Length: 229
Ligand code: CTP
Ligand code: MG
Image (cartoon, rainbow, N blue to C red; front, side, top):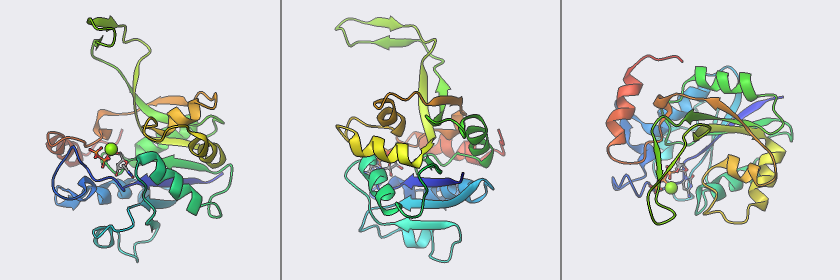
């Protein structure tokens, strides 16, 4: 069994609003996407890393030059995260075996470390339903769905991170059969719709998704710390 990384990096970063896609934002002087890719390049477990960008991406060639070993850029981004990943998997039909594992990881999570990849593979690499990094909820959770405020017990609640790792054939089927690309904000939810129960493996706060302007300094703080969880 081999492990491959697939990094969706075809978003526009609307909530970050820096005038260009947030995956190219410099963090400690290096583009976010480069930090993200390095975690996989430095992991001895990963066979190869594929990065999905949009067809017209004008930045990626500088960040991931053609002669960088271990990475291939696919210019097949779609309108949603789910479609970007599905398009990437279609292009990789020959390259990745049905039972090989695909680790899907957001370009917008530059705090990932090789140690975290190792933990996910060690704890869920053999799972037929796959697995993902996630964080137990630590705050008290409120809901306004019913019109008035209610408190939802936090025990048993997790926040999903990435990487999310699945047998390639299962992930492909889940994304091809998913009813609504906009409703699928992570890969596990598509797999769950097929009746599978992926394993949750505890991640680390440094693997935050850089989404809002306030997240940039936090990401830089974690990147400047030498944590090998
Ligand atoms: N992504 C993608 N293709 C899309 C949309 C998102 O590959 N059509 C990727 C992003 O590049 C990112 C990851 O999916 O690495 C998680 O998405 P998100 O954090 O929402 O990034 P954006 O969609 O770029 O940000 P926003 O939603 O604020 O526009
Ligand atoms: Mg988005």
